[in-house]
Length: 408
Image (cartoon, rainbow, N blue to C red; front, top):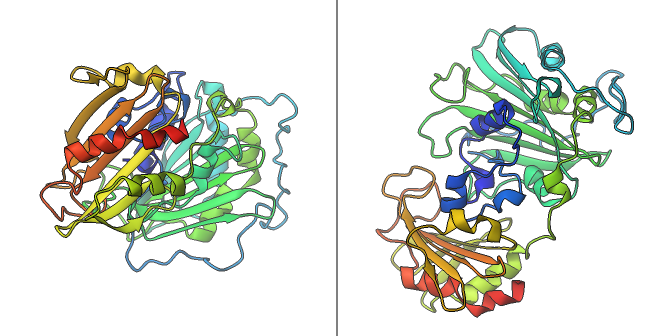
């Protein structure tokens, strides 16, 4: 399933920040093999709140109202100013102490503990600050993180686009352009998309035209896992999240980070979702009815009369460099050199009884087609049938169809 919508984004984002090794863009091997939608080593594999999971009955505060712009703070600096040098001049790497100090100044009145941070000056490729905040209503984990994203690139779009509800169960999500051209996403969901725990995750992502990326995550628990829920909701309202993520000081700190080399080398955009789904639909059995189409991701919900089932397809270029990870023992090599394998697992959401079948194919020029089918209408719903809606042979036929050659 799409790695951008992992059910545990809070943990993964913090994991990225905590990682001391310099390989900021190392792929998650399990996601590459089982997810079917990873882009290989050449693209950052950030599992996002995007990224995320949802709170029945909780409305996103401020929807339809005026957005808090970065300068709407009683005379705060205009966009692009921060008290630190501009991106055009050498910028000293931010320290963990600076990050913690800035975060604490912007929190409402309350007790702060468990401070943890690492800046660029401390060797962190993705600076972060984490605290446990208690305003008297219960302890809550809050994280602020920084990195750089090529504005207008695929990763930037994924960062600020709201997830499809079929892929990611959530309550509310709003993506908006601010007056200075920055893109803001506000999300409300759960740490666990399947609802097995009531830990809520609210987040804000800001991507600026200068490529500065700031994200804030907050919980209604002191930690994302193995920590009891301490309050009904995270402590910061939507307005406060907007104010915090848009504070000019973070942009100045982000200026100290190097440009993302993976984003700078990103290949041309993949085919549009609509085009891929049109091709996919044309290869389905006649008796199968399409009841839902993805808008941001290439998935369909099908019904053959025996229960609805989720299916997805992805086409990718330049994937030859991960052939060894994707096609190991048990893979088949066709006469023309195409690699094929079949995988069966329980999906990636931990839903009892879930069955997912995947056929993965890689042409000799690195062109990859992956097709998966699930025995449920969404990734997080209970199974609606015993087996996926598309059989193994049909999945293979679709993955190897010459109709995909139009995208090579």
